[in-house]
Length: 319
Image (cartoon, rainbow, N blue to C red; front, side):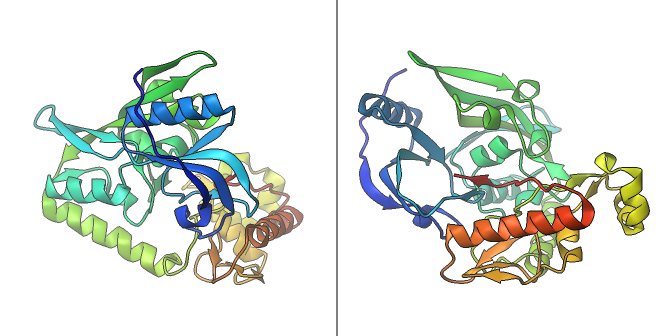
């Protein structure tokens, strides 16, 4: 695959590329706007003999405060190309770096439904596919047709396309999260036609819910922990905590509920705080460090484990 010349910057603060506003310096940094530049960045790292990582808008990742010696590749491959399929649905091809809010606005303009649940998520479509993002009972896997990636091996860089089934989507997981040799560059989505007023109403409803239930006024990286599958709970746990049975129909126990029951809402370490509005969010109240956040994460896991015997698992990526 052809590569393009790139401009590599040095000693860039990662906190400027994180919705958490936390993170130390990375030794090398480059922003790529097309696949040729991406290939150029990968080749540059290989020639330099250093590792690299790809980031979108930093909405689901905690960067530590130390100096990172890798090459950070910010994916800014952003475009939306519609392809009409039939009267019932329409296909969109979109670059991995396309912000979710742009996709939502485009779908509203074109009267396409399927993205309303994404409103308020400050990420990219590539990051959403990588994590199989979800909200309001929906997941990205529900609308993905195909995913185009750059596959990296020791000797070659090639293009590869995965079908929805090939992506191995599961709860907040995918093939791409498990296999670091695949870098998402394009996503093919299938959306349905709908009346514009209905789409607009749903977007407004979801955004209002987020504003009233989530601490959008503070820097954060979204939900810290995965919810717990109800089927994994033992009968003895349900006998000891009968209130948990209320979540049987939704098939999962919210991590926020467990954290609330441990009286951790509002707990603060340094500049990091467990949100008073939504306890599965940790917010940066001003000068939080990654260490502050890590201590709170450890505290939450310990308290929930001690009280319920449940081991919480992080949804975020700790880099």
